[in-house]
Image (cartoon, rainbow, N blue to C red; front, side):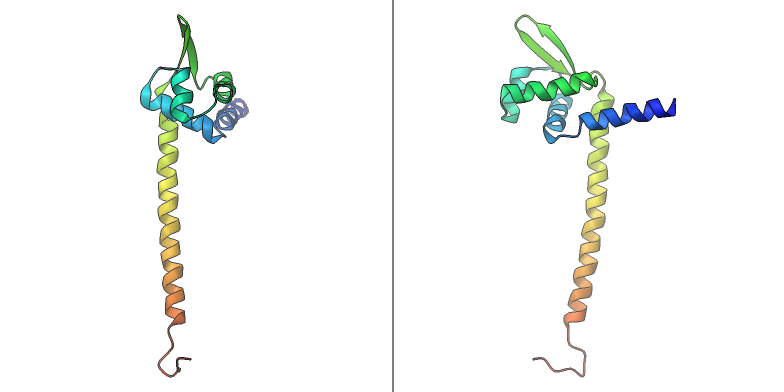
Length: 123
């Protein structure tokens, strides 16, 4: 059972392994159900490109489609999918803050080492 769950998770993250697919999911998270034309217009992408990415997301049940007359509307089947991206943003910010703190420490150490000590002359 654990192995099946791990494979499911890996497939989910693999499907989200492209910035365009993440942008699509974020758009659907923020907008709710929208037509495919809105997706490619808002993201500034070609229809064929968006269709390929949507096929990957549909295959993993990350997005669902329904036909309404002559339009295909896309949405997220579960709000938890959007929450996963929100958690990743939080993780990114936490990591970024740690990296910035480390950078500040490194710069401070470099400035401290660059200052001449009391007995040294400046060139």
